Image 1 (cartoon, helix red, strand yellow):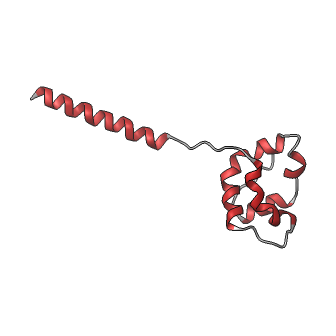
Image 2: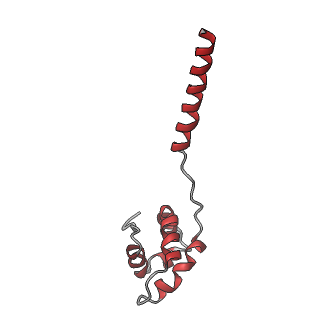
Image 3: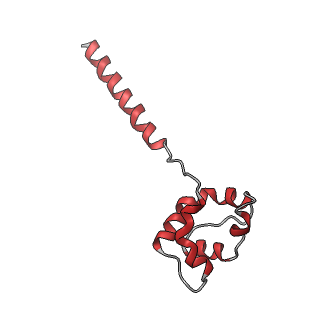
Length: 98
């Protein structure tokens, strides 16, 4: 009887460890500025609202914004005053400083 209880306890403990680990996993974002291409029309033509695809990509790439701003090659594009407006329209926070 004690052996069965011990096995059950081990199975429950294993299940707790496995399932609690799942909740802690965070999917990594691959920073790729090309992913923001659906936003090109909204950024270059301020009168055009951002598409759903644009907003989705902005939300996905948000953790990468500071990296893009600090990148000398991308900085000139990321400093476009329309980008924070487009991000705001999508409900995505654009970092004022990095």
